[in-house]
Every structure is written in structure tokens, then in C-alpha cells.
Amino acid sequence: MVDCCSAPGLLPFEQALNNMLNVIEPITDIEQISLESALGRILAQDVRSPVNVPPNDNSAMDGYAFSYQSLALNKEMTLVGRSMAGAPFQGKCKLGECVRIMTGAKIPDDCDTVEMQENCQATGEKITFLSTRSLADNVRSKGEDIAVEQTVFFSGRELTTVDIGVLASLGIQKVCVYRKLKVALISTGDELKKPGQLLNVGDIYESNSYFLTAILSKLGAEIIDFGIIEDIEKSIFKAFKKADEIADVVISSGGVSVGDADYTKTVLEELGEIEFWKIAMKPGKPFAFGTLPNSYFFGLPGNPVSALVTAHQLALPALLKMQNSHFIKPLLIPAKTKTSLRKSPGRMDFQRGIIENTESGELVVTTTGSQGSGILTSMAAANCYIVLAAEQGRVEAGEWVKVQMFDKYLQ
Ligand code: AMP
Ligand code: MG
Image 1 (cartoon, rainbow, N blue to C red):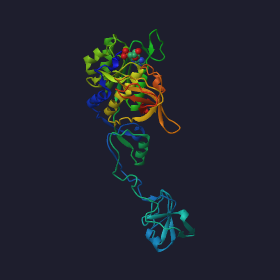
Image 2: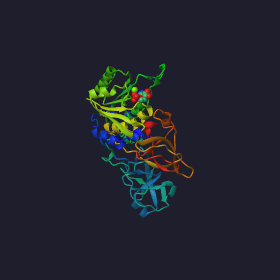
Image 3: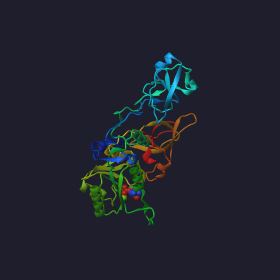
Image 4: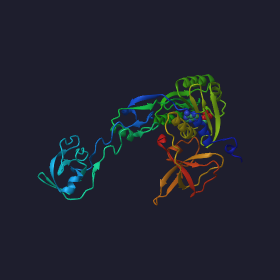
């Protein structure tokens, strides 16, 4: 039997992704926001440090600060004051003198070296130094972490929890970021009901908009949910037209295959320049992409696993580019499959698996079982994709495969 899906005319996955990335123009609108609300936002400017970190030469130890020259002259010095964190020593520290100093405290102007207290003997104001030292020992230099004017983060960086802390440590209160993407979500299909509604015979619960909302929230997008649009040409037209007017991106699910009641194709062709692809990937063959008058359009397949995998593998990189984030190609990790994997040549497979370490430290992966495109639990049970190249056939247990870990968007 000829596999329908290995038929020629399918668009290779990489080509579909590149086609989209070549068309997408990133947004340019920027805004200034407070550091407190900057988590996950995309920097629109390089950030240069307004200060040195640390701002002064300071002590790495609790001990005594002195001029290195003094130690060569005499192992005994006179204590003339204290330098504490937040209360630096203000006086003069001449040759033969030393200053009690605490970790993080400023090194007095006349000093350049610190000895830790464990290597000193204090008798009243007389401090005896028991070890030899090199110049600048136990001194953390001004600007050794970050020098003033140094670029700390580059434009396009998605600010992480740690980054927020770094920016605060530089005394930065506001950052310049790209505005949030506005994404309109449309679900199509008369059989769809929202959780909480009663199911009639033939109905199913709508799930795509829920995980799409979750992915988009992690992306930091503003979501405009159009809900479920009935399979009536006029209604679909109205929804897409409105969505295009108010959003940067319109994402629909369902209705991109050629079913009788699927009007999305007719409507979209009327509204914009949309290509309906058959992508050589599994799950997720039917996929549409193009431009509407004011927005980009992504048409995901209706089957939940297909919708989720195409959203994650194809729409997400395009959205990242659109919001100016750096898209990093996912790592492919080699692992041995514990089970055989059904596969026929023709389409690139994103099977779902569980990757783990054996006791001997080897990476092994196990399939989550049935890989049907409606079985969303196969994604829920997984922690990775088993990525099988288009030309690959069946894989036997013990063979090496490539694995792509699930990232934050799926967790
Ligand atoms: P379609 O591409 O519209 O023919 O949909 C393919 C399959 O996916 C059908 O079984 C639909 O019921 C199902 N489907 C479509 N949209 C959704 C959705 N938002 N949530 C869950 N299942 C859906
Ligand atoms: Mg449908």
C-alpha cells in the first residue's frame, strides 16, 4: 500500500520553517517599563552598566588592610582604624599601619592588600602578620565583575529571573523592551464545546485554544480569544477580518484540511495571501501560513496533538522572530531507544518519548505509546520529542535516535 503521506509534493519541515522565517518582519514598537514587570520581556536596546561592580576595591576577607610595602618593612603594624561594609575608613593609613577590615568593606585609599584575620595576632593595637602575602591579595578590584559602560545584555535578550537581579545590582530601574505581541486565537468547528458546556452527540471539548493560550502566555503575548466560531462562511469571515484588524498575529486551529464544512480556506484566500501547505511532518501535515492586510496568519490543524506540535515547532520560532527574541535551534541529543518505533519513510516524525538516564549513565528514551494525532495524553506523558528524519523507516529497540527535550513552552 502506498502511504498517502509519503507522496511527493509534501513540503519538507525545514523548508516550511525557513519560508516563514524569511517572510516574518519583527515588530519595532518599543516601550519603557519598570524592572519589576520586565521578566520575560525582550530587550530593545543593549544595556550598558552605569556603574562599576563592585563600585570600589573591597576586601574579600575579614582581616587587616595595609600597604604591601609595609609588610616588607616589618611584620608588625599599628592598628589605626576600621573599615566596615557601609562605613569606610576615612583617615590616613601610613607605612607601618593597618586598618581592621570586614568582607565587602572599601579598601582604604592608602592600602592595597588584605591579610585574613586567621593569619594575624592582635595584641592591643599591635597586629603581627604571620604569613607572607603578594600585592593585592584578598582584594576584589573595582569593576572586576562589570566595568562602567560595559555592555551587560544585548538587545533581543529575553530577560530571565537572574537578569532582573543583575539589572537591579546595577541600579537600573527601567528597561527598554519591545511591546508585547497581540495574538488573536480562533477555534473553528461546530462540534466544539467549551469545558463547562453540555456535550451533544458528536460534540467534543475544545482544547486547542487552552494550550495555545498557555504557550502564548509563556511567550509574553497579549491574547485576544475569539472563542469558537461556527462553521458558517459569514461568521468565519467576520471573525478573521476583526482579528486581523486588532492583532499582529492571527492563529486558528481546525479547518485547514479539506473537509466539507471548512470555510477557512475560502475566507482566508479572500482576505489575504495565504499558502496552504502539506508539510512532510507527523503529526501536523496540513498547515497554513501567510499574510493578512495587517497581520500574519498561522492556520494550525485541528487535531490537538497536530495543533500543539505545529504551534511549538513552526509557529513559535516565527513568533519569537516577530518579537525580536533570539531563536536558538533546539538541541538534538543522541539517545538509545528502549523500544522499537513505528515509522514509514516520507515525513519527519515528532514522536513523543520519555528520556532518562540508566544507572550506568547512558541516555535512553522510551516511546509514550500510541502516537495518534488526537491522543493529547501522549504529549502529557512525554518529556521529549523523538525526532526521526523524513527518510527514516522503522527503528528497532537499541538503535540510536535523536531526542529534543521539551522546553518551557510545553511545561
Ligand atoms: P478539522 O481540521 O477542522 O477537520 O479538525 C480535525 C479534528 O480536530 C477534528 O476531529 C476536530 O474535531 C478536532 N478539532 C478541531 N479543532 C479542535 C479544538 N479546538 N480542540 C479540540 N479538537 C479540535
Ligand atoms: Mg473542523
